[in-house]
Each structure stands twice: as structure tokens, then as C-alpha cells.
Image (cartoon, rainbow, N blue to C red; front, side):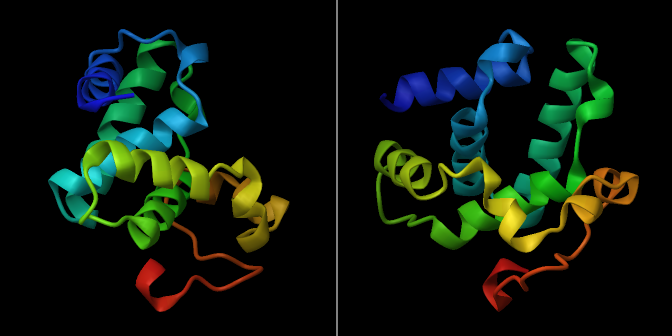
Length: 135
């Protein structure tokens, strides 16, 4: 992994050049790091939302986009991100720290996270509160 491969992943996502089954959790985290390096949380969220929706629509699974999960993971990355590190080290660290795909289960009940309301907009967790900096 190097800067070029990280940026190539982002480019391939944005241009829908990745097969849908090749874009995994660790790749979502990588893109989140890049977007958060480039801008603040709100702009990074808008960019991630647009990229994921475009990618999902391109692959015929536009209904799979999930706003609460998108924001949850971006918030987790933001909390752990150390911008003093180079991009490669930041991505490596985030992938190590946030490799548990089921982390959201600590914060959300299955009923809440699987609801249409959670897919369509941001919902606060119902099991464990996010730390103030995660909000």
C-alpha cells in the first residue's frame, strides 16, 4: 500500500470502475481517511454519500445505501484519525483499529440499524452513546 494505490482506489470508486464485490469494509475505511484528510467532516460525509450512492446505483444496488452506517463509520474514522501521520500510516492504523465490521452492533440494536429510517437518515444509537467528539 502506498499513496498512489490509495488514491487509485478512491478514483476507481468514484468512477465506478471497481466490481461491487471488490469494495470491502477496509476499502470504505480507506476512502473515509482520504475524504477526511481533504476536508472537514460535513464535506467528507457529502462526498462519501455521493460516491457510495453513485457506486451502488451503477451496480444496480442503489437501495443498499445506508446513511446511518455511512455516518457512523465516518465518525469512528474521524475519532481515530491522526492527521500528523502520513496518508499510508493513517490508513494502516485506521484499518487495524476499525477492522471489526460488527462494531456498530455495540451502538445499535438490530431493529434500529435495519430500519428504513436508519437507511434514509442519521439516527442516534440506541445501545451505547457516541462520545461527544463522535457526534
